[in-house]
Image (cartoon, rainbow, N blue to C red; front, side, top):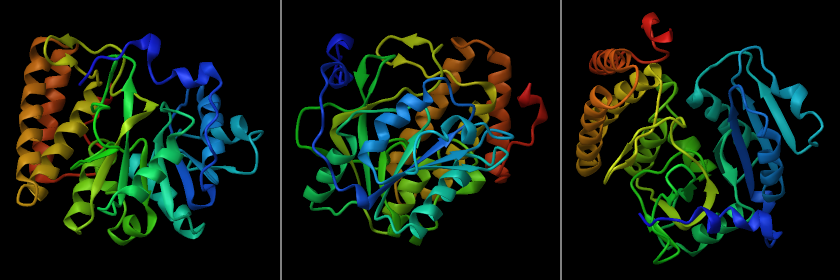
Length: 313
């Protein structure tokens, strides 16, 4: 992946006053999953709103805090206050149901901390329309400010086919997503984007990604360790290590016949991640225990919210 100079990163269009050509807003709704959103959340939503017909914020924050914060942002922004943390997958399915009922053709799924560039939706729609594969999911290439890199190289065609893409920045065919059952709610959090893409592919549809960076997005927390030739290792708390391990193992078990290469790479990455935890990360003991707990529950297929109370400390 090429190095990107932060001084000339894709975030510059905001500074230069770039204004994108309007896209077909009526076909696209967006869902943003919120969980204790930070103070810049409203600003990120303001950058998103002009690009889509409507935005639904699904608030997973216990007792909610988004309705009051966002009530002045206009009628095209809606808030679903769930009152408790039901998990990312259930929140996304709430957004999918809303998109079906609102008759949106496409649903843009976003994390609360993703910064969309002004031409994001327009570019995703153009990429989808120009792709002969008729993709059901169009992911967005992104610039990671922590690593100073884009997820995939910008050089080449406008798009490239992928096996999986991350949830944030994905333009999803609403009818296809509904027909395959939406996101797996028993995953709760982590790896649900990969499983969803694999399931869409199992049903004969394709997944692609734009080569043009369309958002600023980072994986994991800010305190990750830098490993030469590997890059920054995403920092996750012990509880997240549990979900990553458990859900990865279940995904591998379910899809190794259909996607053997992807599953082999995922398993290798998971095991290498365990080695990095043991050698480089802070809270090693807690994270190794979380990995072990996730492995046990993955083999047993004990899904849903984590039942290991010691991991919530």
